[in-house]
Amino acid sequence: MLVKRGIILKSAREIELMREAGRVVRRVLSRCEEMALPGVSSAELNAEAERIIAEAGGEALFKGVRAPKARFPFPAALCTSTNEEVVHGIPNGRPLQAGDIISVDCGVRLKGYCGDAAVTIAIGEVAPEVQKLLDVTRSMLEIAVVHMKPGRRWSEVAKRMQKRAEESGFSVVREFVGHGIGQQMHEDPKVPNYYDRQQARQDFELRPGMLLAVEPMVNIGTADVEYKDDDCWTVVTRDGRWAAHFEHTIAVTDNGSDVLTDGR
Image (cartoon, rainbow, N blue to C red):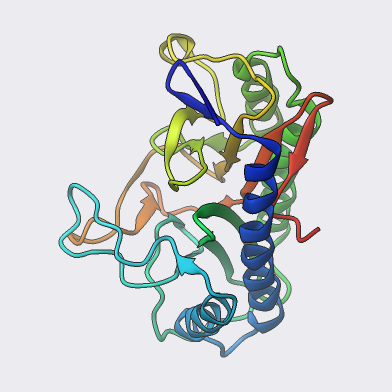
């Protein structure tokens, strides 16, 4: 590996190890997509995720994580965020209902290296505005995959992602962003899904060997968010309107980008 201005560039061997972790993440998310039906709870999704991760010999990245304001360590393998919940939702026994959406975020460490990805799943048929939210947020991740190229500034990619959301009438969450990833779940740099003057000071050039967890979080209404409860884990939209979240672990290569959490 090579450290460049706080960003750890990975070797080809390390990238393949991260792809192995990414395959386990994808296995979990694909199984959750199969299971996420009316009447199933997020606790059931989490139990299945923990089984798959343990069977693969991996470690659930989120379980036991401590946050500065949180009253207790995160208790589960998955973050499961429903409807107006944006990120960091704790799995629970409430049955999912037709028309709900649920973001499922999974992180795995395998052989010392991490993979991290998320999908937002529609439970049956959802309202047209909600389906549009899912389609737009997913397309923002696809924009990142296409436009991540060596020599390009991250801000160029983030501007394209932000434009897609805002032209569709949605807003991009500011308080939570993507991140570098490798042997640790969170490494430098921070990877915003938007661009402003403050972010200009943290902009960076994409280089081969750079590994980024890119995760657009998009709200139907205001971009403002807050904590749902005093435990300071579950983040919700301030106006109560719904949110979507998609994520991939992506390597920058000599020729462009390589998604490590798509199951290949």
